Image (cartoon, rainbow, N blue to C red; front, side, top):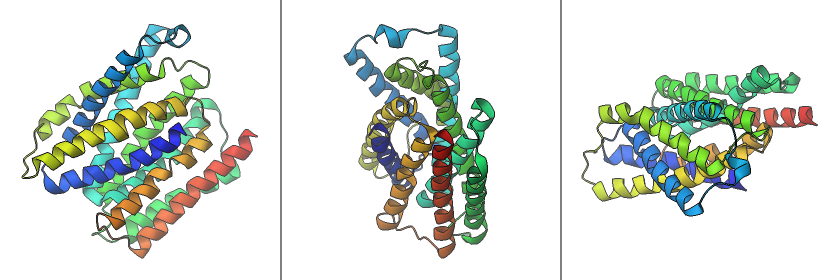
Length: 295
């Protein structure tokens, strides 16, 4: 249930970003900085209201925890900033589908290399299907719909997402995930520091004639698809198999595509639909292959 809520909430973040890009000159770096900074403050308040973490959760080598938070924060910064850049460059639907379609494939490959999880024949076929879907999107979408630069940003975002998920699973599977809320808040603190120079380069205060709209969207982005969704995501991803995470996270690209077409007026060409379908089928096939392997 945590991951379901997180997936649905994440699907709305790109839509809010797309609206802000339309009515202001806010850059991807500045938006990602404000998202992390606002999310950190909300998570910090939630942690203070909750009180001290249980002793069983708080234990663990401090050096290892610091390294984990550092890598998580850096991967989160890459994940979010590159995703917003992809949405700005190639639109909400394609940017989200490529990011969340390629992410599970990178997670499966990374799990094979770092944790010895076998892909199997079905997994290799799913990887090939996902790459085929990406090729259809890039080569057949048309310049007005799919831009290669946006796809590259989305792939970089997927890499950050994969590192974040793999590290969460690596520590969570052995019960070394630590305090979930504290880990999430610490991750956002690191990401905020990392993104500070990028936010400054973009300009923290956007120039717009719709200031109230931009502020309202920023408040929404920092609260629902950030503080709430990431808190739930880190808690769920630490204890749920990667196959399950991959399937549930399909809620984000599917939901984002629906919002893009119905509310934002984005057009999905036949090639875009085909490429999207190939990627979603590939990820579903990968999940099935991993589930069978686990059994």
